[in-house]
Length: 244
Image 1 (cartoon, rainbow, N blue to C red):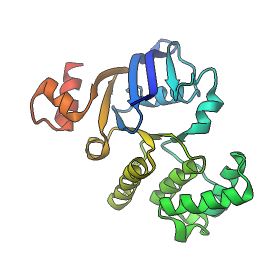
Image 2 (tube, rainbow, N blue to C red):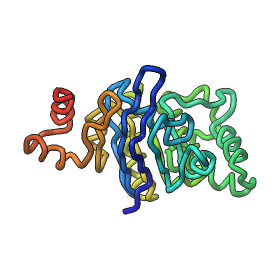
Image 3 (tube, one colour):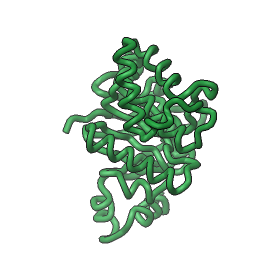
Image 4 (spheres, rainbow, N blue to C red):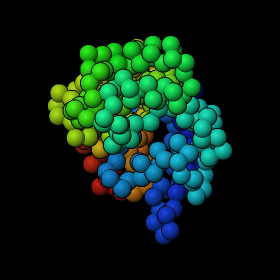
């Protein structure tokens, strides 16, 4: 499979603070890749560099074969990014919010309405599309955030803590949606999280970040083979952190 994300020696310093340290990372087409680590491990800084929102201090990245530093707009055209906190106009309906996004993406009115209907169905909000977003629950807003990304038919989704603050039902709906988009639409997903059970449930491969470095990457089975047969992700994760 082709690499949709590839970094070599990717490094980011903020003054004396080393946020990301010589990161070599690959995310292949068709994966749901779990990007694991506690707060401050360098996950969000890495994502910002992949999207061209901050420049690396050293090293390089390629996203869909494009350098995000040189051509960030080209990356954004084909990559959907869901931040931890999704922003919408609360005094507009979900459909009106998506219509605004479609206009920003240059879609015709007819094409926009078709994409909006498809997106609302995909995120199970078709019957709530004419409701003001200000009345949405947190889980509905998160799913609408995914719907917004679908307007531009992304090849890759980068999701930063997409289940943060969700109740169990909202979490299950979000995880099921991610799997559906991957399996039924062929969208590659990079899922940044510190919630091990969720990552273990849906991710085909994981990378474990610690203090700005990639401590390990592979399938859970591969990582367990490096440690102790039969270990679950939580025990693998804690073992790498003890070693770090």
